[in-house]
Image (cartoon, rainbow, N blue to C red; front, side, top):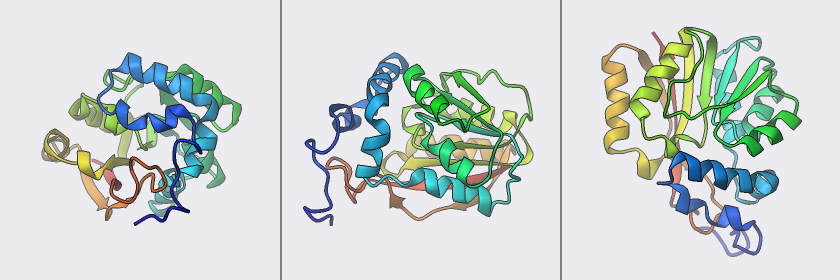
Length: 222
């Protein structure tokens, strides 16, 4: 259990960060507005909450031997914390997509993305087939309603043999989400590489703490 000294309350983080749990079922327009508002303080708030998923996600790309010059799609890139860690790991051809224009502007300021585009991942991704060596989707699948279609899109835009890496909250890794994973596997679009143990998500956030964790999944496109 988190100690009082390690917890973060509403006095330590912005109001937007405090309201994060209210966004689980939000529609795309509401989400975009929420993250637009949060973009200014997002990079300060996340470390306070113990968020280390971008570091872990970049390490997965290295562990899976994704070439440093491979085009990578950072799906749901937010303010670019995920792309920044990819860049630190040596990756230099990164495309980021997100609903929030303000977040994308913050990502652009980091200077690590080749392309940044506004995209709703409940819709087709508007990229050509087999154009990426890998896709990562970190801390974003919570908000995707058309999850089976998104998995198909990931498999379409990543070349055969490429990597798809994503996180999902353990409490949401149920029902339709599992069925979408299974359906994509049965369709022979990808093969499971690894499924992690429950890992920390926002351990210092008072509404998440040690109880709400995430899985890291890695699939290889057929």
